[in-house]
Length: 297
Image 1 (cartoon, rainbow, N blue to C red):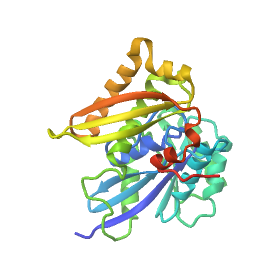
Image 2 (image 1 turned 90 degrees about the vertical axis):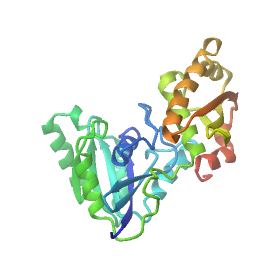
Image 3 (image 1 turned 120 degrees about the vertical axis):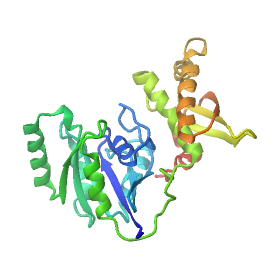
């Protein structure tokens, strides 16, 4: 068997559906997903297999106009992911208006040498005539090698895209074992799953001034994992929101996160959550290091 392997960068504006597409191509969840924009904060590699071919998908933070240090670090991580890729997938939410954020992405990839594919996502929410208009307009701005119409959430069109990507991967040994679906360490994946639950359960109540750190991750003699995590928030009132009345909210967050972590790690998990107020957590170099982000001045 001749092995083939290559990298594909997935870029787009916030909330275009990049992580959903990566999960669909891999065939299981490797990146957290929420309705909030800018959910993905760092680069994550998802590993998709197609026969003897391994496609390493680089899920990136959404590209937007950065204001805070964290924003700048996220956008820098996104652009840095394009290096050494065989192809770039430019994901566009077909159901949303074409904004300056989309324009920023197009400008950023326009002069790159890699093959570029336009992937119009959420096509199930848009009339066909409008889809063709959007595709024509975007191809006039940038000459894409090919255009795909998909709904990542429903798996529509995903198989065809995966087949095309597999066909263009160069010969070479796989970068990951066949049964490995992500490059994220278990402690990082666990923290991301808990952060996803924060977003899902608190919706607009909790702003982006929060993150999750795994303080302790150890295996018990029975094979189960003991995980202690710290939820960092910026203000006292945010801590109260996360805790909920008599601690009900934090218990629910922990319960759902634990079940998802158990599924992801394929073993029993003992999860302990603690909420800490740290006003300037997004100015802490250690937090950036744990996220896998570079410190950006």
